[in-house]
Image (tube, rainbow, N blue to C red; front, side, top):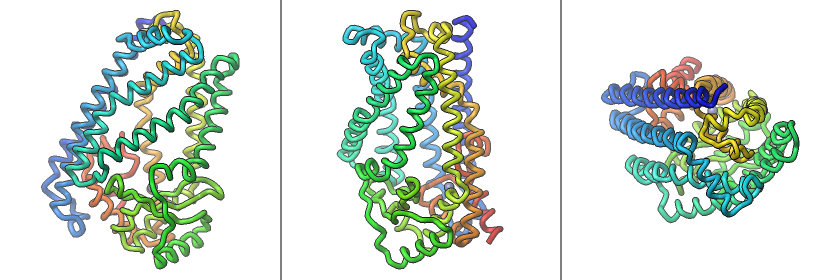
Length: 418
Ligand SMILES: [Zn+2]
């Protein structure tokens, strides 16, 4: 392939992706806005018109921001590649570091990470302090936000930089099969993360206290016994420090498994509803969704690393993305790959969303067997209401972006079942 052909292909894919994204978000906005004045029939008893309107306005506000965000993001990728940004960074950093060396590569990728974060920052701030605040979800003070950023930066430096160094070193030192070594390293690192995260990292950001409510505790323990699930404890997390959105999840593997309830969830739901929500989470465990997902991620990352190894041998990959021949270092290749991959991977989004929705239905069905379908339906209605999730998503938008099935489908299935 000639560099020009690849450039054209890349620009066409970038514009097509942006166009589809924006069109879908506009559709979603229109669809939701047209249904703002009427609560859908299945929810007429449980959701007020006021809550329904709030959900519509919340969805529209987020779509408007999403459109600007997607456009700026595409411009950023274009500026770094064909605009010569990455090439300029590569040359600029060569003044401080030995060009093509390990330190130079780490500096380039770190600089790219910081730059990407800076571009995203105004959107993140607007989301938290304008949109989430306007709809009454934000509990974060600017001081807490700054402290979070500091902690995340420290973690990125302490963990991210050594990992990056290891990857770049493997890419340079392991000969033509480096992709296999990087994959093994990356996979081991991720598995380790699953053990380390709940015990060491998550407590840096939130407080976890053992579930104190005796009655709820008994209920949950009965459910766990019924489902044959062993865990290392039930915890309540102070999610209310940052947001009013509620959730429940379990983390870790094997003996390190722990179940975590957001305090905001326990405030909103009755004990029977909490049990049903947890039964849904256990459904994911029962159906081994986490392992299946991990297997797909492992296979995909292996294929992608192999692809990267192949692309690094093709001069059109660098030249077609605005990089001079001499700059074909491993770090540059990695940076280009990270920038370009989302553009070409976009069509796979609906496939992953579909798979995820199948899992959600399976988990719902499991919860209906192990707990009460009526309680799960009631809990979902409360969560949709309190999270201001729209009950009337555009079907096409939903197919692309929603990891969970539309509320109306989930609730109606549960009601039929109960
Ligand atoms: Zn789920």
